[in-house]
Amino acid sequence: MKRLTVDCWVVVIPTPHVTFRVPPPGLPMRLLLSVLATVSLLPAVELPFPGGRIAITHDGNLHDRDDHGALAMNLALITAAGQGDRLVHLDYNNHLGRSSATMAATMRKIAEDGRSRFALKAPFFDLTDAAQLEQAILNFKTEAERSSATDPLWFICSGPMETAWRCIDAVDPAKRPFIRAVSHSDWNDRHVTTMDKGDADAGPNAPLRRTWEDVKALGVKAHRIAFQSKWQDGSDGKNTPDWYWLRDSANADLQWMWASASTLTFRDDKHPVPYYDVSDAGMTYWVLAGADNAKQKVYGVAEAKALLEGWAARP
Image (cartoon, rainbow, N blue to C red; front, side, top):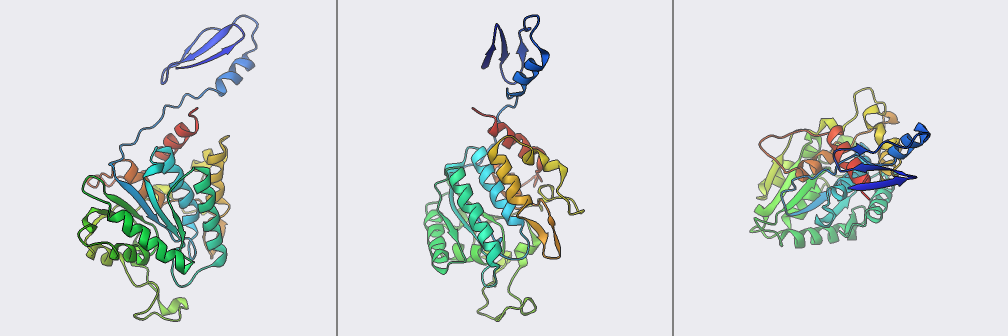
């Protein structure tokens, strides 16, 4: 119960119901409304996380900039769901080989800002650094080999599958069945190095060779869920009003999420307009919400808003 006292009257809010004592005569209504505006009526959202730990791999350093916003959204969702300690691995800039220095730097800044903002303890790895790529594989191996049927490692695969494959390939085959790999994107599932993209080597030593089929062949528990379209802006290429609650929030964390996606993320190089697309974060929400493989539900704006605004309103 939250209790707020102004002069000689009280607003009592036993969430989720609201009860008011009538203010004394002469109290300006605008003061009453101002007070009420500061009191959260949003109940906390509790998600049925199935247990285990979470690992995430992102690209964001070439082609679409959607991972810029999705990275920020992922960190916020995990924190808002109370599972920050469950995140044990995050790597980004996983488009190995070709890379945009500007896009890679943006991902690096969002990762560093988000880790500090949400006080996350998991190690983060920038895969444009060859040494960090090796460290990421080693960290993933360590976490995966701690796994069991009751403590699985959920692996959110956002980007080409090469890094995911390398991480899983390093794991003891006896432990791979306890890895829960999640994908939702045809592009991510199939994207490999090709000569027509200007790569010097599209042969057996190409930096991107592995696909979702290769990942599944390693013996993990694979979850190919529905494309998370409700986390993506509409086809007009404009900032969707459905997400303006982030932009207009008084909460600095929600404002940061909006800025990470809408001012830094664009559809692609041919459509250089702000474009809110955090569809890869739909995989993380799917896991946090119980990982119901049978229903394959596509969540989206409404669920994100309920979780994040409820979290932001907590004392």
